[in-house]
Image (tube, rainbow, N blue to C red; front, top):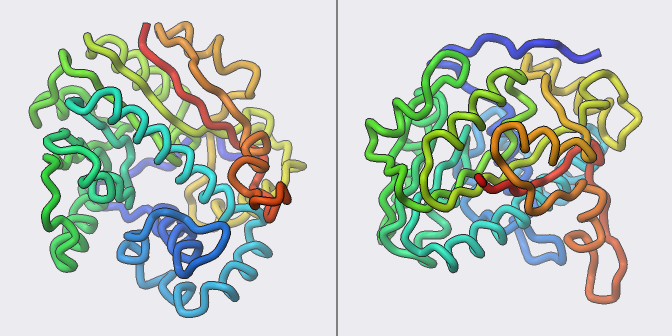
Length: 300
């Protein structure tokens, strides 16, 4: 069975799973291939603990597929899906706010700098994660010619009030806002998730969309029969970063209705395999972990 509570986080914690995610994005961006992760900046954010995986990406992918079956390809699907979702939002709302919740080593504030100008990005994470990330960006001059405004908002979801911190950084509740919650929901308790979404609906007055991925409740409660579930469970337990919260696919609409959200899109990772992991001939080239879903919800 999984842990029932997230370990308490300190402001100076370094979240290893964020670096592992960056590494998984980087190995699939390393060279031209049919399944190429679009995050070309991921390699800069890989912690030294995992940098050896970048030396021989093909071998590393084989190793990772044995350690966490489908993990690399789930990260690929997630990156592609959320990139496309954000691109659609920016086309429709070129003057808006983007809030990256638990931003980790997300590079979209940098990668999307050429698509839109004067967009306000708010990166929310533990102070230590943001400080580390800013150091990488500055030392590698990754923010050159980026005309977007990026604000870093140190926040510990377990003890801080998100919107108090956002308002201090200039967040405007009257502006269209896109919240991206990638690779975060399953690390937070149910009470924190419910407060987070209730606060979003209470503190935004313009068009507001939240995009997130989520783990299945069955998996959280101990069903490790999903593809890659047992291995993922073991790896996260070893890192003391367990998954603790989930929602089953069929319960998404009901869960978010109670917090004044309507569900626009909802897919399981397995549903997206053929679309994102197929070639031009219609063959599926890989398989992703199967205990995740990706959904987009909008404040009513």
